Length: 212
Image 1 (cartoon, one colour):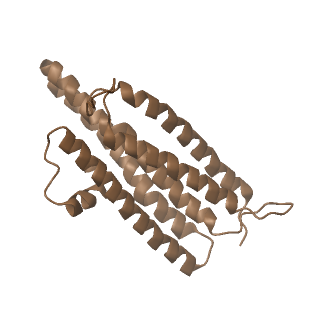
Image 2 (cartoon, rainbow, N blue to C red; image 1 turned 90 degrees about the horizontal axis):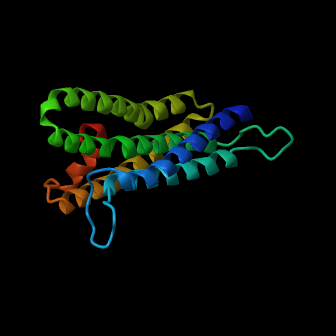
């Protein structure tokens, strides 16, 4: 099986933009309102958003390596290995975590803004809903629609695609567990109720935008 190298290069471009955006947002997150106040630190900590962005950075770097490893080492450089599709799945996970890192703290910031200007509550609520709906749609597309399309269109053997699909679901569940842990830490640190059971928090993270 041979896939044109330009297919892989297009994905490397997406990953490059994602890494740049994540790197910028990690620095800017310290200036956002809300978050946990930790003694000794001059800024608040957004545990959930920070973890989402660092996971996005790590997933993007792993996807980059998977794409590079899919190339044949010859004079043409076709992509001949199933790691090309694995890189696709990791790329989508990285994009989903980037979206979460942007939109999850946005809801808290808008709520603080609304509390300061209660007269504009109805207007701000419309803006909040619009932003979170757009972010949620992007998250669902990156988490579920994109990987499904990649697996359906994959030119590799059916058994390989099935194995990659199962591996993706396992990784998605593990990352949901990590995200649930960070959400619980943030809730406990702010004095909120994190929920009765961790497993319910993990299942909630599989449809994370509804938590925002």
